[in-house]
Image 1 (cartoon, helix red, strand yellow):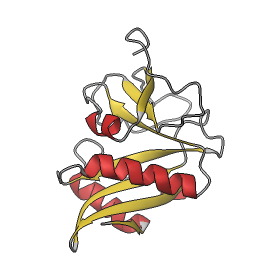
Image 2 (spheres, helix red, strand yellow; image 1 turned 45 degrees about the horizontal axis):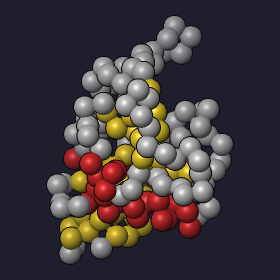
Image 3 (cartoon, helix red, strand yellow; image 1 turned 120 degrees about the vertical axis):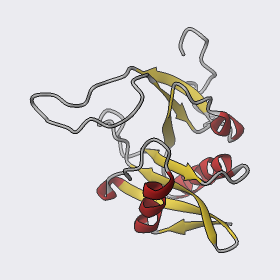
Image 4 (cartoon, one colour; image 1 turned 135 degrees about the vertical axis):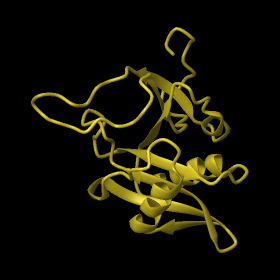
Length: 162
């Protein structure tokens, strides 16, 4: 069963179970969170927020900042699809998310999402704005978007683009 859940419940789940990014997204950017339940037990969450990139933050575009499950069958693809339905219901025009280059994106493909582009690895700490380095693999990320049939950009990219 999929339900809207409060930020605090989703954040606690992410802290406990996310495999490489246990820090939840900023509460100020949070739009909504979905929880997937197996009976009374929470088995997965999706946290939807404003985009982290200021260039993508148009007000019409949101992103799934964290998706975390405890391994339940089809949980990830169910959460991706439900997050897109809820985001559209709330007026969102585009929903995206990132995966590491080492992740195949099988759940995103199963939910109908398409890879749009890849980002280069970056160091966020600069002398002008000090940041604590995140413990993530130093590789590029793939940006995916939910399907939007009226959008010409939403075509599968060629192998050269990825």
